[in-house]
Amino acid sequence: MLRFTLAALALVGSAVAFAPVVPSTRIAPRNTAMHFFGGGNKAAEGGTADGAKRVAAELKNPVVLFTTSSCPYCKKAKSTLDGIGASYKEVQCDKDPDGKAIRAELKKRTGRTSVPSIWVKGTFYGGMNDGGPAGGLNGLAKADMLMPLLKKAGAVKKSGLEAASPLAPLFGNNMRDALGSLPGSTGKMRDDKKK
Image (cartoon, rainbow, N blue to C red; front, side):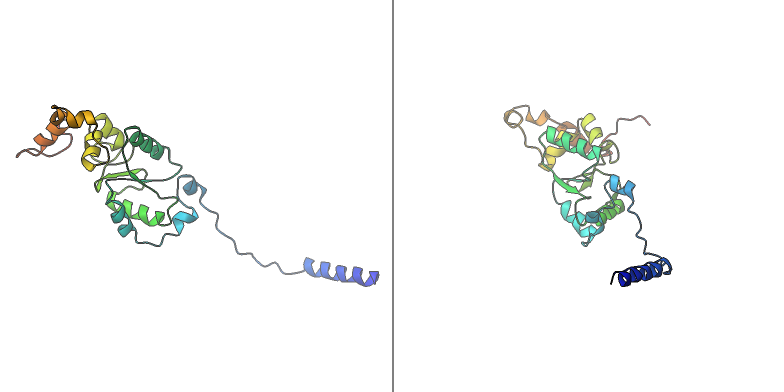
């Protein structure tokens, strides 16, 4: 019996050694750079909803941040808004099943694929440090335009002091807003540059 077993193993071993080599199906490697920057994972690849409809639905919120979970600028933008007590809706494109379609729609609307993509009352205001009419969230804050914008959107509640003060009309950029609506004004947010 032992001799039969050894002969069978020798026969099988020689058959394996002379078997034709069949090329295996190669699976393309995942783009690790895209994965690092918040794209290329299963959640973002499996989007089924129409990106335009989804973005339009999200933009009905007073303030929306389209982000990715690993983006440092997204974290800074959220920290900035949290620090002033603003409420906002966050859509994490790398975690959302429709993330890929959402980012494609954002590119159509803004010409940008970067995150964060910050929207207030349906208007694009850029990222953390760039884009939009004032240079992103940071530009709005430096120009003292962020709080009035968020208050107007209803994302920040007025403090009791502001609401009860006889100087309430002077808080924020109410004077700038009033002057911007006069006939003959350009309506631009920053018209103080010399031409």
